[in-house]
Amino acid sequence: MTISKARRALSCCILLWIFHGDGGVMPVSDAADLQRLRVLKHSKGEEDTIFKDIWEAEAFLAEREAERLLQGDIFDPPSFPPTPPPTPRPNPATPAPTPVPDCLNGRTREQYLFDQLSLITSPDDLLNPSTPEGQAFAFMNNDPLQPDVCTYPIDQRYGLATLYFSTDGNGWTNNQNWLGATTECNWFGIVCNDGVLASNITMRANNMVGPLPDEISTVYAMTQMLLSENSLTSTIPVGISNMTQLCVLDLEMNLVSGNPIPGQILVLTNLKQLLLSDNLFEQQQLPNDIGLMSSLTALWLASNGMIGPIPTTIGQLTGLQSLFLSRNEFTGTIPTEIGFLTDLTNLQMFQNVFVNEVPEQLYGLDKLSVLRLNRNFLQGTVSPNIGNLDSLVDLRFDENILEGNLPFSLSQLSSLQELSFASNRIEGTIPNVFGTFNALEIADFSSNAFNGPLPSSLFDINAIRLLYLNGNELAGGLPATYANPPVLEDLFLNNNRLSGPVPPIASGQLTALNEFTVQGNSFTGSMPSSVCSLRTTGFLDNLFADCGGPNPQILCDFPSCCTRCFQDA
Image (cartoon, rainbow, N blue to C red; front, side, top):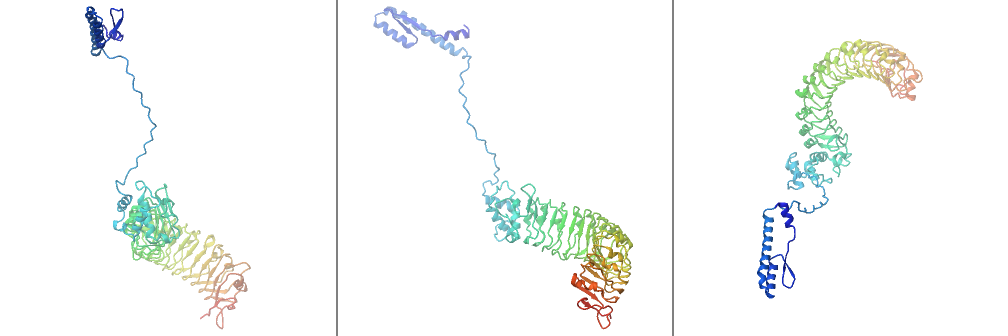
């Protein structure tokens, strides 16, 4: 029998029907049925048939048991699979939240802040409520913004809060939003380049009083720090060296002292503008390694009381465009290496103690628009190569010990707006080359040894406002064109050898004239009434002439016309 046939045979229900004497039938399918058969046969006196029937029934049951065992031990289980249990219907799952890094590691928020900020500030200062750092720490613990300390730049917020407390933020002219429930990017004067990190702080003239704290180093993405015209004190903080992206540092007109260019400044290789004029860097010198600051385009150290020579390494700052060293006590000669600074447009070294000649190399800086070497002890002559500086708008060599003649090449400086050779020992004539100097507003040739006639081309300049020719040996008469400049305010001709009458002026001329000095000359005649009328119709406040004594050289009514009369000795 094959397995499949056996399965089909055994799948049928087999019953044995036993017939007994009364014609009835009885199904026998298991041992219980067989026992009932025995009882029935015995009760009806059919013992003679009982064994036959029982034997047949037992044989049937034996066959049933054999088939059951055969099916269980030999045949394979049914080929059709059992009905699988129903797949449970999934419930809609709530997306798991993105895990947030837990930086606290069981610490309280305050303990975490303390641990982090102790890496910046000493723990003693953090816990001292009288220090700016302690006040900033207290602010961080009670911060109305309550930023996530694990993801927020808390060091920057702490550093700026320390700046606030260190410079009396409550007394600032403008402290809008500072220490409020908003990011630092919304605090007054702060600009962020990405909405998070501060890149610019501008607080000029904001009544900041006190030292810059070292904690300013935490604002490491800062590119511009513009804090001029305040009352910042102490020294440049060491922590500033961490601000490696800093391009502009402007602390002008403060009370900062100590070394203006310490090591923490020298390492700022991206620094382009270092503006430190008008502070308290007395008795400090420029470092020899200043050449390391090769990215500088502006170095302003004027009015600081600094001393010593200018190091020759300054010639390594080849990108420099403006150099302000005026109003100090620098000594020695002007380094010839400054001639390497070919991008210079503004060079101001006035009011120092520089000696010897102006280096010839300076006359090769043809991009210069401002050259101020006045108020030193420079000697020698004005080089003919000065004509190379044809971009100049401001040239001042006054108050030195310069000698010789002015070169004719001065004619090439027709862009000048201000020109001064006052208070030197220059002699000879003043070159009459100013016919094309249309922008010249101020010309000062006073207190030298110039001789010869007045350069008449000076009176052809419409822009001229202040003209000082006094204190020389100029001779000859006053040209009638002296009244041509329409905006002339000051005309000083005193203490020369000028002679002849003072020419009258036409109506509408010299209406802006405020001071007119002609004393110490040999002028004769009377002061023209047209000039005197400027006292009432114009702005003439001071008119000085040799109108004093019993025999005045020039007649001039005092005080209605002349405001001061001198007497020729």
